[in-house]
Length: 231
Image (cartoon, rainbow, N blue to C red; front, side, top):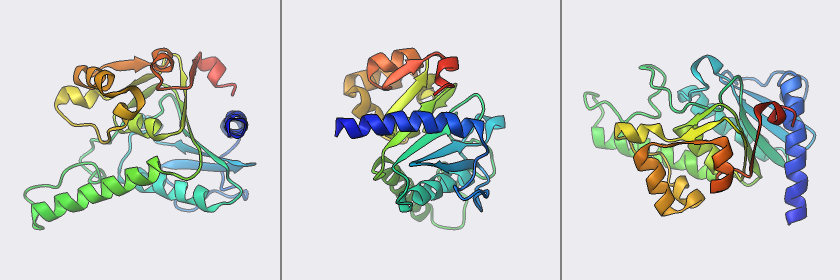
C-alpha cells in the first residue's frame, strides 16, 4: 500500500508541473464545457483541478462551489484517473468563501427577510454544506493539495480534506474567520492536529506557515516556492 501511495505521490508531482506548463483541457484536447471558475486537466493517470479566480484570491462563490463537485465527479467517473491534484491559479490556493453580495448564497445563512420560512431555508443550506463536505472528504481516489500563498477559511478546509498536502514554505494556512466569531465549516482541524492544538489555532485565529505546517502534520512537506513550482 505504501509503495502505491509513493507512486501516486510522485506521479501527482510530475503531472502538477506539466499542468502548469500546458493549457488545461478535459484530456481530449478541448476545454471542458461549463467550467468557468476552475481549470481541469487530465494527463496520464492524474487529473489536476485548479481554482481559477486569481483576481479575488480564488475565493469560492456559488459557481465554484458547484464546479469543484462537478470536476471531482468527472475525475471519479474516469477509470483512467488514479489521483487528483487540487491547486490554485495565480499566487493563492484559496482565500476562502466569497463575501460578495451576489453569487455567494451557498455560504451565507438565509436572509431572515426572505419569503420562504427561515428554518426550512437554514436546514436546506446545512444539508447542502454537509453533503458537499462529505463527498470531498470521502472522495474515493487520492487527493493531493498543492498549497501556495493564502489558504484560508474554506480553502484551508479543502486542503485539510485532501489526503496529502504539499505546501510552499511561505504559504499561509488558517481560519481567520474565527476572530470574527464565525465557526469553521468542518471539524477537520481536530482530525489533523488533535483537539487541544486545534482549539489553540482556531480560537487565536492563528495563521500557520507552510514550513510550520509540516511539523504540525498538516502537510506532508514544505518547500521553497521556486522548488514547489518545479514539481
